[in-house]
Image (cartoon, rainbow over all chains, first blue to last red; front, side, top):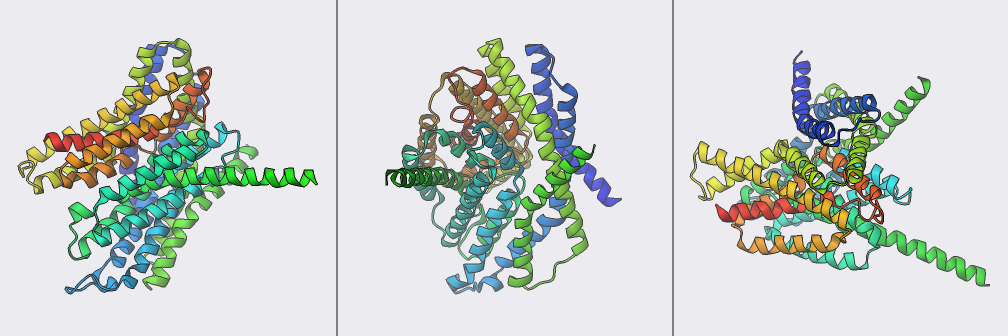
Length: 262
Length: 244
């Protein structure tokens, strides 16, 4: 019974997200475009599926994965586990598990991120299959994993966030110059889509746990910023993935050409 | 019917594969690193089943509902040829989907908290609420503006990287003037504003527009809207922090 009422709360909050969007879409369709929507019933059914799907998804996450994930983030950053004492932040080896957790949780939550799945499906369609859905998602997930790991390092060392981000920007700009033109827009987009429903709550728990427990860190100043890392690094990894596949295709062509020459 | 069922079965398998990494990570750390038993295994399994089911339904709904309507409307706007209504639609979509976004509400409340503790505003319930509401409106406006600029870019065929570089310069310049307490929140706000429903719609809109306009490639020109929508909030939140 309790579970049921909880599910309705999730359903209501998803409904609250969907309604403004539906009003804008159908309002413009009815009053401005004034055209009949083809397959209206199918589209409405699709909206219903999205609504139900998101509600189930969030409900399941909140029931099962978030409590355990957050608890683990707390346990891994607890002073006992890290060996943090009044004297100092302790041995760096104690933090190895935290880094591994940051990497693993960044990767695995990104693979399950629904908005990334959406963008990957679209990119695959539009590129006529040359951009594989899995290739893109793995590239983005590696980017997020590296980003969060570096973000955790920043919280542990207490270095200012903006220097990392500025260096990251310079890296992105340089990479843009050398990257295949067709992938640039998609790569920039993958920065924004990675961090939503699944990633944010777990990563925020990790960041706040670390900032709370390491001496000299202020949760308000140091607890934030992990999301920023997670939105910057996928841009680099997706461009890197495009450069790598272009280079591999080029090399294959070269070896084939030289093979024909013999 | 049989075809539909086998299709559904396959998508369920896809969702299981999507979620397998998280489950493995959690099991590994819980059992081997922290060496604790998994509390409430039945609840965990039931929750995981809900997540798998939800993801499957969501992806189906995406293909049946969100993608087609986004593309149809983009195409209709392009053939109607009225730039004004298209831009108004773009703004409404950006503003409307952001202003009620739960992640943004959470970030705005957090920012108000920081501002109150930093002494930027008086530490009262009312001042904090006003600050949070103002911030939310600012971010929603910035996302609306971002989608408008992004749509204009698709129509005109401007290369995405120049606009992004201008945005980066904006972020860096604002960083040096913004109060240090707001920087972390501002940087994070870029990532949280684009929700799970907004992303597929906005992507379909961009791709639909780029495929309807002659001379635009859906891949090169159609993407990029999300990138703008995650860049402008950073600038606007820092501007908000400077002004108050």
